[in-house]
Image (cartoon, rainbow, N blue to C red; front, top):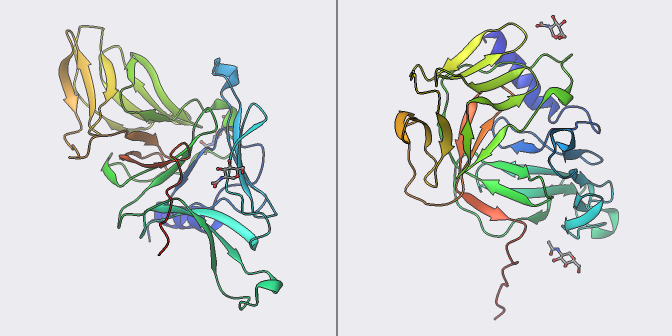
Length: 283
Ligand SMILES: *[C@@H]1O[C@H](CO)[C@@H](O)[C@H](O)[C@H]1NC(C)=O
Ligand SMILES: *[C@@H]1O[C@H](CO)[C@@H](O)[C@H](O)[C@H]1NC(C)=O
């Protein structure tokens, strides 16, 4: 196994980092799997960059999953006491977010049994997905993955504080000018003045990927459209570079600068916590 593969498996085994104080871990990935374990939380806190907040998502020890915005509850799974040692993860096969736990003694189920406590409505088969805590405490599930940068996975420098992270998820219909596009710890995506889109490590300067298309116009933009295609445009919105992968399904896509330094586009949005709960008709 290549060293990077070993490190990535370790990342998968240990799941989501340490618990609290991760000011800026707000994405769960289905592949490699990250889990939000009992007592852990996701947090989106960009208040130092002038974005209102913070928002957080807590997998409580009592098995209730609760999201907050500025300290107020935005959404809850209402699964208090349904199981023990509950965790949230994204099921790649069913392409949905699930809370899994160990049955309580009073349930009469065998202790080894994995109990499905909650899942978002509906599922479609297949594909990588991401589960994202938005700035306002709203939750969203996006997938499958339709494009990724070809660079190999990297491990972030653990001595870089998550405070150095800025937004690292870009949504469809965003239009981003020259400058920093996304930053996760010591990985950054920058649209240079030359209109080259470049992914690199800030600690070693190593270039991980770049679009290799240049323009002297000094007015270029990065955009992600409603079919999940990423563009660099220049001049009069002319296309300079495109990711060349479009989905037939129109909707909201996300580009994530993942914690393994790969750029991946997921979508469209398959579920949001603002969607009304579907009522299952009884017989
Ligand atoms: C949880 O309960 C609250 C209050 O009754 C309700 O408004 C909300 O829709 C419930 N959440 C889910 C996911 O069913
Ligand atoms: C990680 O970051 C720290 C602080 O910036 C730096 O001193 C150190 O050399 C970096 N380590 C590696 C392996 O790049």
